[in-house]
Image (cartoon, rainbow, N blue to C red; front, side, top):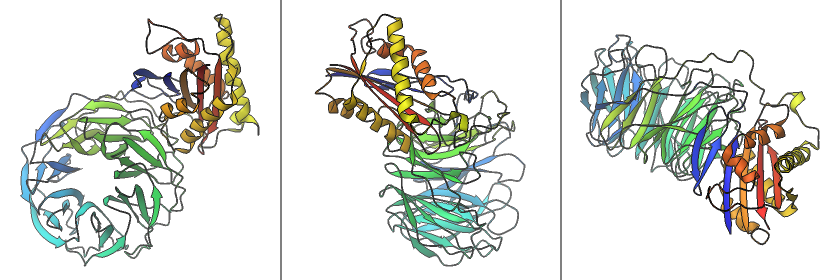
Length: 539
């Protein structure tokens, strides 16, 4: 059985993917225009052996961004002082514990100078590096529990002193260290979380003015959310499903509803999970987006300056960084990739050259350097009108039977086009429609990423009916006529139009097929986004 598939998402930038030896086109819609993302060529700066985590701060109080990186095999932290133009000096190295793996910056002794906290995996310690204000540090150490990996700091008990949180990878727990304000900390208190927690972040996810804690649990495919009680203690963890092997996470308000959301980089799945916050410490079910191969780290920032937060992913195996442009509704475009050093495992975003644009710095574990990418995106003005609500306006809402009407509208418009070029109509088949509808529902709920995951299985389901099958998908939101938008998008893309017009994308100069059956499925997500799947079949 032959099969091929294409997708179209109402997105503002063309992007080519490759699936089953077919180009997949993402089309340009009329709304949500974004500036293109671009960077100057990377500039690499040598550091220690196997740099694993990087942070950006001002370590010498000159008002310019500096970088600090934990070097796993060198057992050091390298500090690179910036000149304010996007380049950095020779690294100054400070010894720490054995196999430093994560780093966090804050003022732990209240002297106005930036300090560092470093988790040391093998020595099971935290190195506290008290800043001297000139880019050098004085080191202290405290026990951290088994296999400390992720580390974060914030005021957990309301005393204005930064506290520490560390994930214990083999202990399946997080450890909390309350700060004394002099660079020392109280003995740790542990809280159980999921299996193999690799990263932690702090944020107020239930809007009670108290910091909550979230860990990414790589081997249980979950995040654990622990609600803070404002006194340095936390409630028991609530575990929420993510994609495969979440290794890192970040938080931001990705759908502009005033609630803090979560994103995990799923190392084993090549995806990011977007968990939209409800403002009470709970989250909507994950929505998956393709992120590039082996995403090792994720951060967020407004990379293209359109007023909407984007995602930045360090892709370990492909030695690249991917930017997923956000639409302000909790959705993201397909990734745009940029080359960096070998084996990037950590990424940080911030202004490195004083132009008020967010630049990138990545720690490259194999090439033992830091890649700096200065932002060259053309600044775009934030939207002058309010973006569509997460609940579509009344004028775009179909009536109670709207989903079936949308499916019928797609069917009619596709056949109208076929008729206009002399092709016979395709006939609706209920079995094929059931399969197509399930895929649209899976995309709408986030069970699968937008695209063609599982197409070979769908083709197998209808193999008793079809000898040749083709699939096209689309997604859009905020349009008065979603069905017309989807079909017009398909017809404006040669690859999608080829399937509608019985032409093969796999063999452009080879045979064409006369499709005679079709199945159409439409579903709407909780945020108002419509997902369309149409499968064509040669009986």
